[in-house]
Image 1: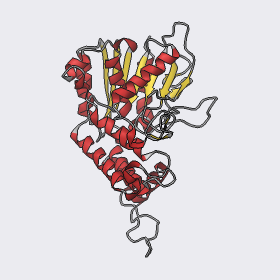
Image 2: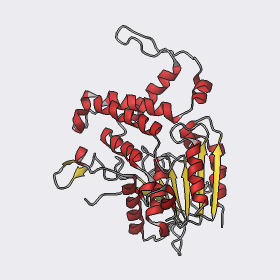
Image 3: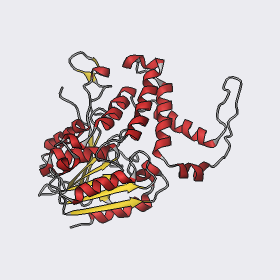
Image 4: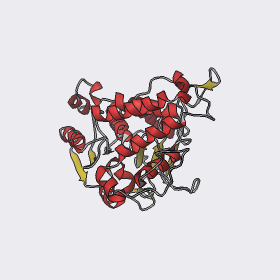
Length: 343
């Protein structure tokens, strides 16, 4: 298989070709991190990347890649297999975080970039950034890991396992052979709702919604509809997600996160990190993150302290839990800007 890899860039590569920053995304975003002349629509990290922003495209050549296995341009289960002229579906090979990291290296090869100024990864992308730095230690000078970890823990694995089971148990899934005009909508909606609950903190739910009642009416056709506003919120986000993301791609990428363990590269986390050749590293964790708890960020920072000359570990008291890097800009922007002001 020769995969297609979708990516977007901002800024200019300098004459020395040493100002590139590669951004690995979380599970569901596309490569469209920020607006550009080619695509003026807002990106998923609009407040972080672009001219005079923390990831400053006036200084850096920014590259954001759509993950291998996704459905926004890069080859994945929803892509057409050129050998059969049918969608790969479950014939797509088992996907690992390392495969996404290798795809990132292929993008750099195509751009003629031998070494990055920095690798940045958020959530699943943080795992991918660490894998990239281990697999290609000479190809990046710095690593920024945000709300990620060196391996998945049982709690996160359990949550994602339930999400995958919900999708697979939807009769419309049809063992991955659903018509693309009729995907397993109910399974995707429920999986997304469970995901949304885990992406935010209980304290935020309390502050935002409390016991506010929904304005929706329960009818005979829809009993037990939505009594509370938090239920309506989850329904709204689930409806937005369904139709925009392929269920089989979701299954593959979700499992890839669970399969990742940096200790596979050397037998222990310490041995894996000993392979790194980083000059600097920034690890950011959120105190209310359920999926990647703050102690996992501390664990990664401690591992890096032993092998990287300059390591910064930041803890954020954000209410927004795992999703804080997308919404709590007043805390995240200054920390990332400070790291990239380094000369």
